[in-house]
Image 1: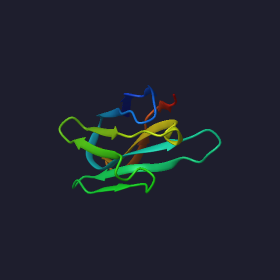
Image 2: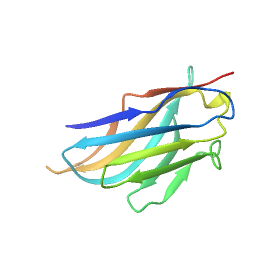
Image 3: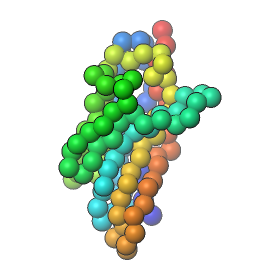
Image 4: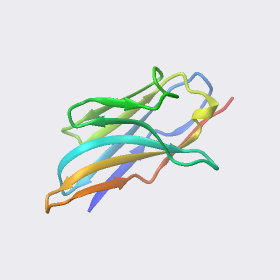
Length: 120
């Protein structure tokens, strides 16, 4: 079993900042990538950003230059620093983990989601 625990969501004014964290625990042999997705009401879940095991990153065009994803391999934790937040960033943010199990096999896991609301 693998658990993802997210934290850091909340309500912030436009132009403000938030930092999300997601810590993984369990029988993980290797982490391929860690990332963040978001889902706004009435919309499909979309990629926000992802970071590979080697540290390369990929972002949605809508967040480039404002959001930064990073990871601490020793802590199996991924972070999302969100700056210059806009009302359209309001969504439930989900942590995503692609990993190899100690018992064999490749898997994808999701966090429970954390609400980010941007409003004045």
